[in-house]
Image (cartoon, rainbow, N blue to C red; front, top):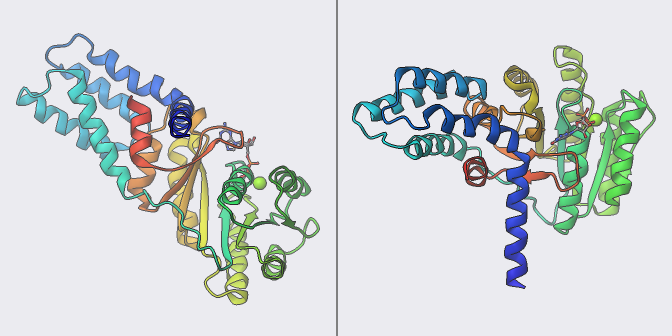
Amino acid sequence: MKMEKNNNSTGVFGRLKEGLSKTRKGFIRNIDEIIFGEKVISRDSFEELEELMIMADLGPVFTYDLIEKMKEKAGREELESPDILKNILMGKMMAALKESDSPLDIPPDELYTLMVVGVNGTGKTTTIGKMARTFKEEGNSVMLVAADTFRAAAIEQLEIWSERVEVPMIKHQMGSDPSAVAYDAIHAARARKSNVMIIDTAGRLHTKTNLMEELKKIKRIMGRELPGAPHETFLVLDATTGQNAIPQAKMFHEAIGITGIVLTKLDGTAKGGIVVRIAEEMKLPIRYIGIGEGLDDLRRFDSGEFVKALFE
Ligand SMILES: Nc1nc2c(ncn2[C@@H]2O[C@H](COP(=O)(O)OP(=O)(O)O)[C@@H](O)[C@H]2O)c(=O)[nH]1
Ligand SMILES: [Mg+2]
């Protein structure tokens, strides 16, 4: 039994490494190439390293601090090998990400409501499907809520996930008031004694103030029907959009208050450094990361594991 568990965890870690392979190849491996064979790290190499870190979306502040630290070490001749340099980078990434470590803790006996927001196409519906599966496997009674009533296809897409994961879903017709769906869902979840409810929402462009108004209204109605609801508001960000994720996150956070971030599509980018940037700029828990389209491709964010998967 024990062996099996170990094998399994290596497999899961391997999958994470694989999911992050674009960043590993595009970023970490290049560090080795830049300083390969150099006894003394040259000014040119520092410039190349700086460029590499900016390219990986680690952000200017992080990069500047890091390069300064490396130069300091180099000045004291403490930078004899690429490994030392990598250790500095690893340590700094871990420190930057540590505060974002905050796994979701679902109370077993009350109705826990989780609203999922974000721009169109970031991966909200897919993430909800994956989370529903995880929560169900952990012994929760899960209900999905189709409050993205803007497009019929959005409702159908969530329905497919609800069938796949075998959890019930509450829906109204396309075009109906999303708050009314959320209202009904709270009552339905109570009647069925569900303990986790996940609400999918529309993601028309974040520059449209009416989307924010709509999201605020859903929150207000939920809070009126169930004190404390929504207990969590997750913002889904697409890692492949790079820097653009930051203003997006700020806008949602200012308008409706975000309690956790899900960063999807890390498998599709070499700019995985965006995680660090988001952590530093938003100071919000990063709850999950997406590393693929499949059911198993959502992972609880763990800063230590994440950094290790990039470097090992
Ligand atoms: N490669 C990859 N694709 C993802 C991930 N998460 C979501 N997607 C894909 O992104 C697309 C948009 O997802 P969807 O859930 O419909 O986004 P929504 O508009 O925010 O609800 C779909 O094709 C998903 O399969 C991920 O972590 N990795
Ligand atoms: Mg959707």
